[in-house]
Length: 195
Image (cartoon, rainbow, N blue to C red; front, side, top):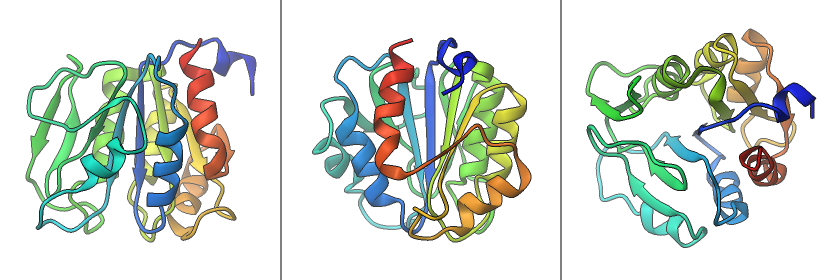
């Protein structure tokens, strides 16, 4: 890993995924150390109706606090936030969340691009942006924006992804910093948190 990547102080990790990403996210969560100094925000494409079981499922894999993000909530280190179903999750420059019910992006709400782009505006070079497996192009523009803001961009290796289209789209339009297999991501986040 390049020294300039290791020397930065990161505050937020945003993770986006769609088809084929759930097992990778569960693996990341199970690896995260209890003393993590970063906040984690997860944007996962899912159905708009029905009760979310993600908080319970994710909580079973980590000792960190897991919850759905709420309007105006302050983002805290050591917490895992999940984008609520059927809302875009925006990250404000005062490091709080806001929700938006505007048009879908890439047929998706929450949109990974929306969260990634607002996170890049708010956190700049202290952002780690991770895009996982998926079947559409949502998240690719967000990765590009994070890279332009000097954040660290990490994309699941398409050869490792269950559905390679989404990470491949990000690689096609952005100079991604790291191509990583899903099983390696948790350890990398832990290492970057320790800086």
